[in-house]
Image (cartoon, rainbow, N blue to C red; front, side, top):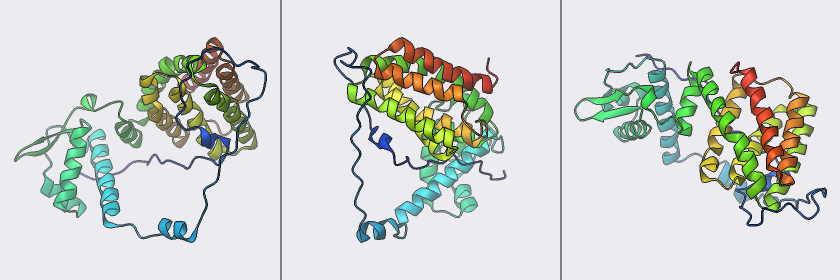
Length: 295
């Protein structure tokens, strides 16, 4: 069985804009729109952390042994998971802890941790005196962000993006409407700010910042919905958005219609207009579906 890793899905820092305040929003009790919905929301600038020599020294310190062990654990689980997805480690073929130790030149402890993690994801079953046995992909924890990440690292990436986009079509319009109904005024006020920053970065061609903001925008809608199930999907949506970019399935420059739709979603949420927020979000996800040839 030949080892191979796929394209990593990385996480980039959140841009230093007013959107850094978009922590997990609270749910408001009063669902009435603001007294003056035409007023522009006022956002208090976030306080920048103080950078000290101690902070710099801490950031530049040599990784300790537990950190190195965690990185090794991640690298091994990634490679073995992709091997299963690519059929390089086929169903019916056992892999012992000793084989993992020898192949990756690692300790028994790390090999055990890898086995436990893959088992927790539903990817393998661990049998005494036999080893790790791959399970059908259909039995893996499909909505676990780690499993999604593995699929996006493999040749299954486009199919995974397709199925996740279908999930977005079902969830995000409803979540946008729920955010317009349930989010606090403070949380709703952040959306026009984020949409404005999205437009500014998109039109300027600052795509790295644009994509970071886009993840924050869509995740914040789910977190603002007042629905725990929607909120639990925020990480998944972030992975989908980043995956589309890394697979070069996003335009080199955001389309004006897409920027307009983000503005309309933000306005609908800010004004407490569920119908506007829902329809504008449907426009966004419909465009994604068309680009992936789902419609």
